[in-house]
Length: 397
Image (tube, rainbow, N blue to C red):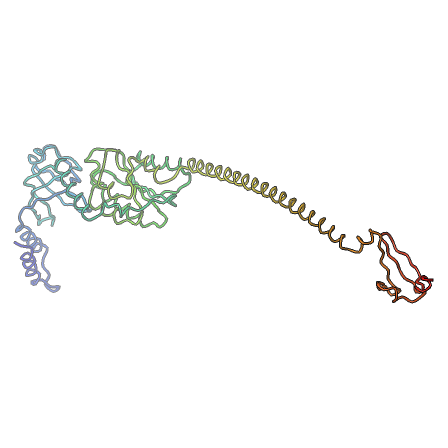
């Protein structure tokens, strides 16, 4: 029966039911059982979440969980069928089951009767991962253009790790050693097994929503390929790609490479390496600052020495120039003074001549302008004296 035909069948049953004439439990259970009984067997891919075999039991129950989301279903299988699975069935193992749904009308419960169980080998898992890798690569989730730069010094660091794990210790201790006092938001979750994907994904979404968390480190120690499979899960990888906060992947050892490494903004080889990459070393920064300070002081001292030498040299050149100008001007002044003296009346007086002025201080150039007996002033080279004019006629007699 197809899905549409099944819905039509269920709807025809519902038409016979109303609040005034409800359908008894026995009828509902019978109808559901009949509807489920029309379904055929189906291949189911899942991870063994619970597996508790009991010695001597004919039927063995196991819970299959979806590796991407928190959904599960119950499978019942013959003990002989379970015993023939290679490698032996174990909790956390990936399997595919060919099963037919069964509905127990007495309890109203649904289970799946396994007809065949196959363990998914490592080769098959790696093939699935390779196909997923190609798909996500084609979508651009691993492109370098999407990578976000890490802050130089984060305000708060988000850390997702196993409970009381060595990875958590390595990150916390090394960050504290490199830059003491940086606060952390730590989420301890399962990093292996059936709960790992949901636990890590939920912690990632929670930390990404905290405003002052500037970087998120997802850390786990080494392990087998199967142990690290949760960090190649599509749901987790897509959640990391959608995060606004830069993510550092520190999963396993140097040789390990889950898909989370490819989508993360930074891949660290180990949790210790992650601590070194997310915060600077205060000792290194202090050395850098000291070196810069010494270079600045040395540069300033050299500049001052150069400027001081230039100033002293300039002063010497200015002083030399001024002395030259003073000497030149002094010689010019002496020359001009000599010329002035040569042209001045004083020079004439030095040669024995005199300057005669009348009583009102006017220079006497003509003796006829003087009246007889008029007092005159006679200036010679060194000093002056008065005299009295007399009639020129008297001089001639």
